[in-house]
Length: 354
Ligand code: ATP
Image (cartoon, rainbow, N blue to C red; front, side):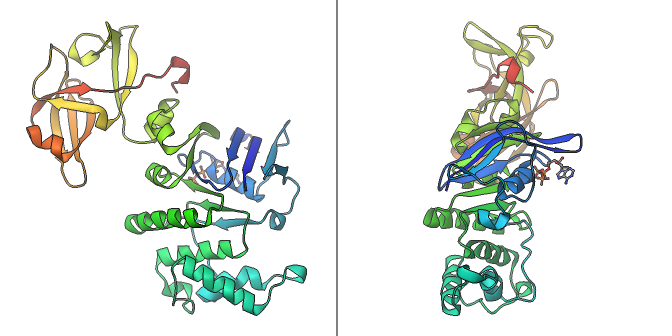
């Protein structure tokens, strides 16, 4: 089911937590709301769920599958919610927790014990907790508890799923495993889902679409590749990964950078160039008088790529990443003097810089 957010503004007293948010989540997509602490992600999620009100400005609306749900009770919205702290019922088993929302049904929504059992056992299988149905929450690991929370949210057959920092309380390795598991599960059940995270890696790895938020606004929305490779502004570029900032200008098709001595810092034609660490070459010598002189301060070879930190002549840090294969050509070490060659940079129009 698609979800549409139109002209949503939210104020807490004089503080504006969300300003004119417009967003469409296509049916069956897994969408990440990504942004720093306080950017309004949770508030937006709560408004979609119906747990929070919003300002009644012209055109403000929340639509599920094209129909407004403003005024609907929370139960009618049929939203599955998973919080950072699993909030399981401690005195219920895994089975009891997942079955809870089904057992409390009354009237025409009531379902038989047999049906409940069938549905719960299917969910236990889906979240890969077979054999653990009689355990209590404190007999489970953090990752297992979070999977119970997810199964419990799915038990009511929600029209879509909202997840607020679902893996936030887990350690890095468990987080990564659960992330992949959630992605596979989503591919299987195709339930429209929105999850909140402040972890860019998590958003880029897991989501079909990423909504980058900052100070109550949407800075950019797009596929992970779009927001990463075509950031709309400096905030998005910076938030989605390490980035190097150079000052310089373009002359005869060449980027001339300040520290090379060609352009001074107070040159009024200066531009700001943003370069990702993997878009930089390092050479032992300059080429045609070009290249930024810098000294290597640290080399980190553990991991799938080589990470190199440098200090330029004005003591600014530069971060470079390259394959181990490429690293093995010169085998740079800490203390080496080298030349830095940005290969690909992004310049933002002035009105986009923040
Ligand atoms: P985090 O990643 O830290 O959870 P977030 O992006 O989810 O942050 P929100 O929880 O949506 O941010 O909060 C957005 C802003 O609104 C914050 O500055 C927060 O202090 C403020 N805020 C949230 N709820 C309330 C409230 N009930 N009363 C006053 N201010 C609030």
